[in-house]
Image (cartoon, rainbow, N blue to C red; front, side, top):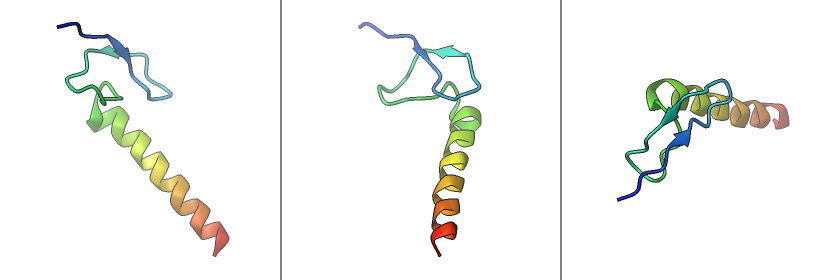
Length: 52
């Protein structure tokens, strides 16, 4: 089986990792993934607040 080394998709992270699942995007879901998800949440809710 061939495993690809991937780079973390967080903007401020330079880590490389071996994904345990093909859809994994971050080196750590608890750190990098959480920051990204919080940013997406903030953007969605900030946009809906401006429209109201």
